[in-house]
Amino acid sequence: MAGLGARDDSAGPVAREVPEAGRAAGPRADPLPGHVRVAIIGAGFGGLGAGIRLRNAGLTDFVILERAASVGGTWRDNTYPGCTCDVPSHLYSYMRALRGTTIAGFPNLCLVIGPNTGLGHNSMIHIIESQLDYILDYVTTLDRLGAAALDARPDAQERWSTGIERRMASTVWATGGCVSWYLNAAGRNPTLWPGSTLRFRRATRRIDLTEYTVVPRPDRHKGAEFA
Image 1 (cartoon, one colour):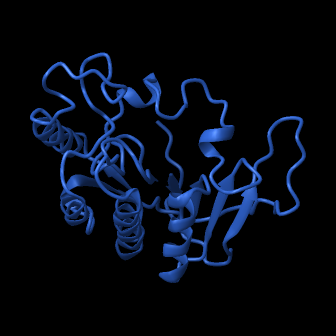
Image 2: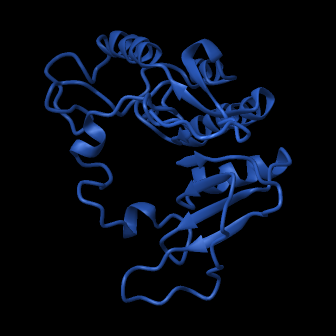
């Protein structure tokens, strides 16, 4: 999961352990910077991969936040209600996201392994790499436009989700009375990707600006206005 802010190239990558209450941080914990361009939450394959991909692209103003003292502790150590792995939960059962990555109403929030990106037939590394390419294009598009944020359009998110549900309808997960934790109470599958990994890679190759509302940066030279 990544959140984006205004550009600031003065900072560098920082790995930070966020200690559990009453537990001292490990020896590699670093102080949090005052401001970063990108905050990456979770140092699993997706989080570390995001940091590597950003650094390789010359974007070093980011921080990786991890609660555990070792890699991949997000699922194991979290205590947020309903935030668990491989079990039904309201937190995930009703999520929708544009191309599995961005959510309408949450500008500059990007997910890795978001809704309908799970696989049962191939490597999740392929999905993660595809999403990281999409997120990198998201960040560079912000720079190119000089924008403050990109917000997924609700109609674009709805079209994407409707298309997934239409393709999902003929899969084994949705036919023949199959019951599994993949399905929520309404019978919808918010977890799996109903296609090939190549199709997902093509779908996340680059940002389509027609699917987003561009949020401009505020005019710092404009005086305050009062009604």
